[in-house]
Image 1 (cartoon, rainbow, N blue to C red):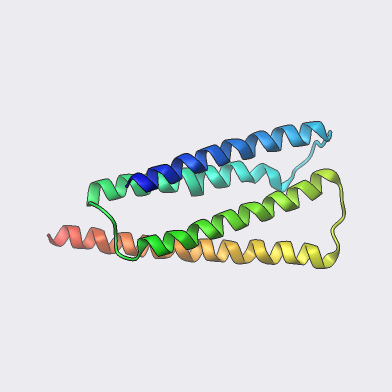
Image 2 (image 1 turned 30 degrees about the horizontal axis):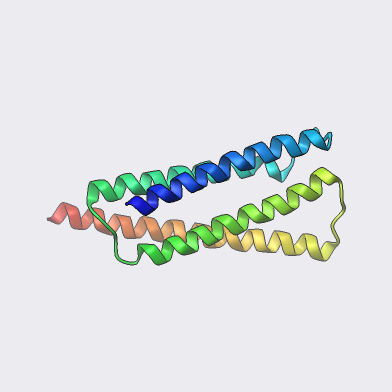
Length: 140
């Protein structure tokens, strides 16, 4: 439970840093449009902070670690952070007005897409594990 709370805190710091970076980087570069940098903050707040806060509460209510959850959460965090890094890369290029070669653009999109798939699969897998623990708690 403590490690889930620590994850929530780390993601809160990353979310705040992402928001400040978005605001200041666009301001410094005189950019006044939509960019991928604008979604880093909400991704980390919702998929990082709120997810791990909910997991902390869940484990408190239903008691302790759930079998297999740690491995799934590693995949979840890899997917989340890879997606955010690709948002950061794309956003920096957007703000700077640098045209990406088609291969680099495709690579960024591909990695972002794969990381979202990993994130989604791990989220559903986490929910299945938690559902099983709820069912086990109801039978006890």
